[in-house]
Length: 218
Image 1 (cartoon, rainbow, N blue to C red):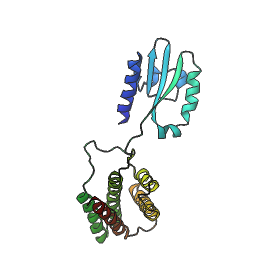
Image 2: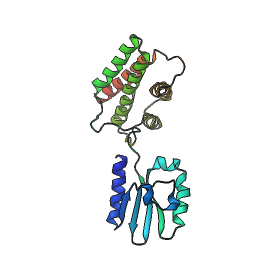
Image 3: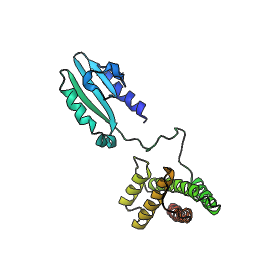
Image 4: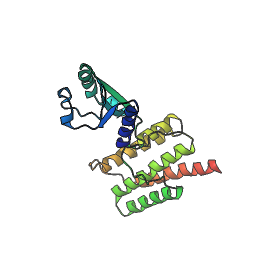
């Protein structure tokens, strides 16, 4: 669910309780004790006014300003500070609503494309594509193993599979190493010399994982 959808859902809950709700109020709609803080919602009903922060559990742990703001709001007569905690987004970054999981053949196709790019000395591009195939394979492995994944970021999927004994320690360590290289490249950073063997190593890992899946399904 998007941020806007989460705000609309929270606003509907307050409206159902008889409140008049303003979503993302402008600065000139806020009292002086909220200077420097932009709430997600302001909900009013008679003499009761709620300043509402809509956040995920992960973001809540990072928002140190909420405790200070809550104290300032709760000190005002007729005002209170509410926190509405919504589910964390499944994906760490926005993705197209029309996207879908690749098929087994498409995962293998990505891996093959990565090896071809590496052979043409486009190693950095090859690693980015190879890792996309690895991420898809990890999610497929979780689904095949009937492990529910609430967040789709690679680190969460890897840690879940490792904790469930689906990934071996050696596989987990190698995947972590490949992920660090991928992240360095994806964020436009420069690191040590990139190992041109990574796409082939990822392809070998993929084939082992995917072959095991096919054998188990047979």
